[in-house]
Image (cartoon, rainbow, N blue to C red; front, side, top):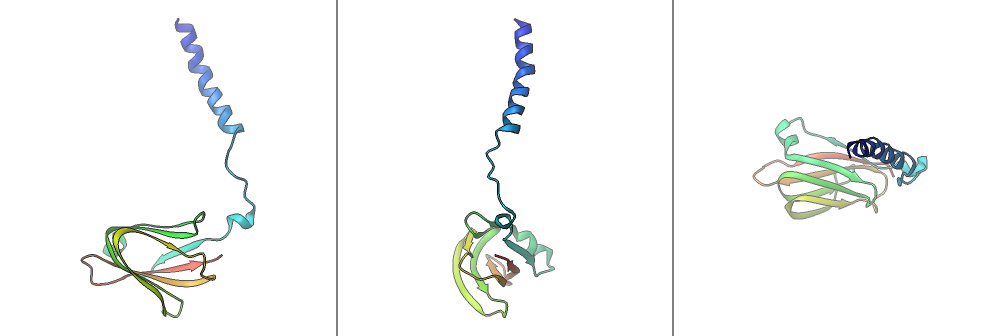
Length: 129
């Protein structure tokens, strides 16, 4: 009984390794499909304000900015490179998704006002697609 168990313990990891190495389901993307995205730069040096933003990422698949914060987002403002308001939206949750596919390449600014805070968190957003 023990010799068969030993064989399975040796064969199973090898079988799984073979499946993972040869059966990749990841799509093969060209260099132009990989390029394009969003770069974020927090424009504040206040470490407390930086800690309030838990995550700010760009989802290439849905072409949106995904934001998660430690506190409820009261208001979000999206501005162009000249700091002219594109849109402002009251939010009321601690997570937010902003679609950016319809905006041209360029520099934008994202301002978040969080619950119990008096200052906006300002982030520079560079869209390169």
